[in-house]
Length: 549
Image (cartoon, rainbow, N blue to C red; front, side, top):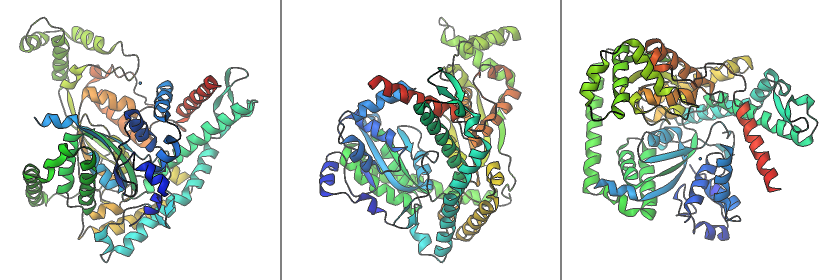
């Protein structure tokens, strides 16, 4: 697989790039440009562009030395022993990696921050060298399943690509532009599109509407993409975290991840060599051996003791399988609330006293803890971390990718497969592309079932985002407030909005008092949910332009 045509830079461009990146011709590289503000801005810009990072730098940063500062100003105006290894930091770009590899990298929760190419803003319909952008695993391509795999992935991308216009047209018919209100600069009020008279207002309205329709289209159609779909990943982190990431990747049985380990190691050696040198020395080799042997042993025991249990072929989307009794949960939370402001009293004695409190007093304390919340960013205090919940989830892989970004929780998952069925968005049915969608799922499943017999890890590449994925989440009440309120906002993807609404209802049934402070959960349903967000962005853009003129 070779997409290096994307890196055909001139000698002059290479000379410039060599001053700001560790290399100008590999798909893994370090960002070495000296100003931190430029590094951060470049990483942020990266997630919403189909360009490679170095191309963005050449096009947008070279000619404008203040590009980084301007970017941050714009964003802010629109919306603010082993431990020594953490002192060394690096920013790494990893390009042309599969979604399987990206999720494996992002499993690491501490010390690393990620920005990934967005499936909402960037369509995946373009080809490079007459090839769609998906990972072509060497083991699969050398096997008898090579043609089947290529056919399956190509078919998924073909259906995805040809469905974009169909879905955009369908959404526009269901939610026409004149059904929404836009800012009218003449009257300084909101008006339907047909009532706008100012040319700038009309263009802004079109921009807002078409951007919203496009985002929703890509959100729906992402279900067609296979897990082999190539993405770009920006990683910022400290040396300690990168050292552990390399260790995990070296331990993988997947060739893609092993290859990435070598490439990452090489590039990190360019920027923070002292902090990752132990990876392949005595210390690192010992850790790798421990991790590999443990995984092999547990895998054997899992096969031995679970062989009589059949896979769940009709799973429930969200299942709450473990939680505290309501009284015990309230006791723990109230005791922690009072402890923080106590004058030397022990937690033991405070808890003993709280047990004697009448319900009215319990209500008073818990409600006081959240009553001043003015928006979802006003997070409750750490007393809410005393209560935990365990959810078992069977959601489509596309949605898992969104929840996987939350790191203040415990998440464990199985291999991606086609065993548990798939989700089909209502819009797919109503727009008339249901047959194409189902044909795509059938071919994907057939490909997976053939490959999985001999290559269970590699078989994941053939599975579409629509297929249901098993995992569990252990999460405390404080983080639950954050996740549910964030993921139920109107602009959120319909899939995770529904799942998080279900999580809220299940917790509210058992712990209604603790959930009273969750004031910003949104249980409504929306058509073009991102419309208001896109409208605010456009208004800010116009304000900025106006202030500069």
